[in-house]
Image (cartoon, rainbow, N blue to C red):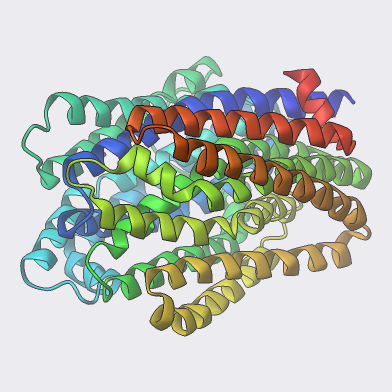
Length: 510
């Protein structure tokens, strides 16, 4: 029980901090939409940002994933000093790699933009190249952020990484509130670089408190560094194929009506709030626990931790899916539609959001299952699964884009996530034996039943009762919040009636 309480306690703390951070991020997206709308400039900015972060984001995520088990192993054998010595080696290696990436990215920027958005031409293409080059230093700060977070997570220090989004968003909000009277997309990219620096910098005091002091130089012969490089390649390939999905979607969307890329971007940001606030919190806490359990060769603890995490994810994502399907359009309208963000943008974004939400459960469970494989240093299975995901996504993109436009791209992403998650479950059961699939299925059925009844309550309150009230935005916001609050109460009450035991643990801890 203590492990379960510890999981919930840490996840709750991260969720609260991340919720605040994502709230600020959501406000940032609202203000960007307000200032810049959903058109040529924002399409260009989002493509340039993708080109800026895609390489280091992929490599950084792979490093973070492989470093945590190795940090844990070194800490158990050589203590904190050994861990910090290895960490310094990694920091210098990542600095060298990111400087090379920035130089190459600057040189090959036109080619990168042409790959990401094949239909950009003329002034839009030149603007995309300019924005991409300005944003390349983000790769350095992003790489360091991943490595520093990996060290802290391996030591089960979750607070500083959880609040790293605070300074990132504050920089954006300061610019958007005080300095963006005349919208300038180039200035927005410069602000993105400054924000990325402060996101990394806030992690430095926590590592210094651990006793870390930076030193120049790195040793490529370090056996743990070589081990990490051997493990990171499959994770890197797996992360890259996920980014390939993003590239494919943006490339295909660049040939659709203007605003399609922005609509997909805003919709995915809303959908990702659930994953970032709750699911990433759970997987962040679970990963070091799983790594420690595997290091102790305790398969029973592994299965208990996994079961706890999966059922909590189902409790969160199933009602969230129903809620986003029902309230996708009013959420986009109430929070985004103003000034440059018009009715067309609202409709396009809400449609993409609905189809992205269909894959929310699958995407969330896949994050958890990947952590399980990584914790016992099996990086090959998630890599192969990621490759399959790209193929499935591409096939359904080509099938659905003609009849459904950008909505088909969102739906293809959801289908791919769900199908590959099922494959991961099957593979994991073959690898470690029974993992409690019946228990997960029972939890899913209970939460789905509670969610459907919740959805009916939300529908009646917002669409029926709300239609009788004045069509004033403030009134509609109040009705939306009231319907969400009452729907949540109904859902939690039904989960108690249906005896969803993980919910009881969450409630007791809060």
